[in-house]
Structures are given as C-alpha cells and as structure tokens.
Image 1: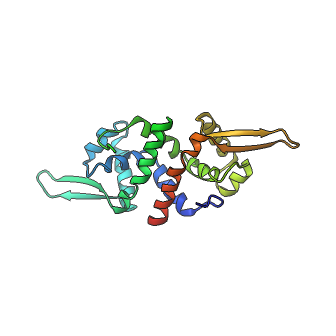
Image 2: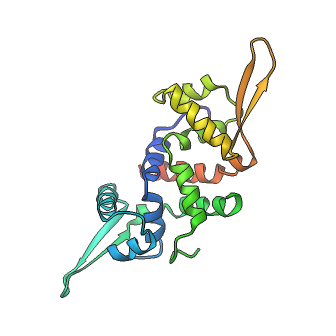
Image 3: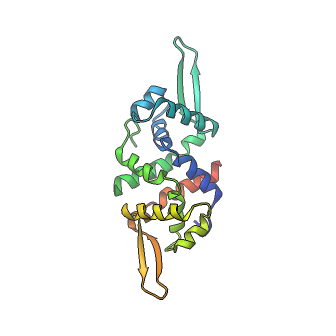
Length: 102
Length: 102
C-alpha cells in the first residue's frame, strides 16, 4: 500500500466509521437484522435520538436498510446491505487489535 | 466472531480510532517516521494544535513514540510503536472498503 500520499477514499471511509457510535452499531448489525430496541440493548449509553440520527445517516450512505413488516403491530428491522456487510473485515481487525493490545 | 454481546475492548479500540484525524495520522505514520511538518503536509486541513493534541494522546496510549535527535537544529520525529504498527490491518481494511464502495 502507498502511504506517501493521502487517499480521499480512505478519508471518506474513515469519516464514516469515525462517527461516534457507528462502529458499535455496525458490529451489532453484523449479528443479523435487529430491531431498534435490540441495538439499544447492546449500546445502552447511546440515546434514542442519537441512534435514530445514525440509522438515517447509515441508510443514506447505503450501509443499512430499514425493513418494515406490515404486521400488527408493525415490525421494523434494520439490517446491513452488501456495502454494510463488506465492513466485516474492518470491524474484525479493530476487535483483534483491541483484544491483543488493550 | 460473537456479535451477540458488545465487547469493551472493541469499544475502547473503536473510540481510539474514531477520534477525528487519528485514522489519517496513523495512515501517514505507516509510511515510516515523520516530522511534524511531513504529517501536516498529508493532512493540511488539520490545525497545528489539533495535531499536537492527537500526538500527545497517541503517545500516552503507546501507539506513537516521539524521537528527539540532538542535532543542530534539533530534529524530532514521530513513529509508530509495535502497538501502533499492529493497526496496519485496520487501516488497510478501511482503505480497501473505501476503494471498493465509495
């Protein structure tokens, strides 16, 4: 890899992943589709508003999709898209580094 | 990997890497020891104060070490420690994802 010049695509990716809670949310969703409350359960310190905002951003970026099941009561689940699932090596490498060095 | 519960070591690692500019600084330092101005050259939008603050944090965390060469004028270089170099797979996977998906 060439580290002698900065790469705009790297910067854009780092900015997406660097937003507070985003790394945690993606890790939870790698476990499969989840409801709002299931995500909150694994990240209890995050406010509802913050999770709502992040999910909207991640939907806009094509990383998460929101599925509405027209049941009674309606069921809403969030899941990773192909682009979102492609982040698994990033999340895994962060996990491995954390386990080894922190 | 177990995605059913959050891992404190993952959270700690994500918080370190998620701080603004940290991902860029580590990428630059993967290219070898650098002086302050060499780092700035690749990240021109970052202020001097911000770079100074981040370098202090990264030194405290044992990710970066500061080498002082007693020349005239004195030369100061920053380089990754073993713990810092171990972040290469993280930086590479972010780069690959960015190249493919952004």
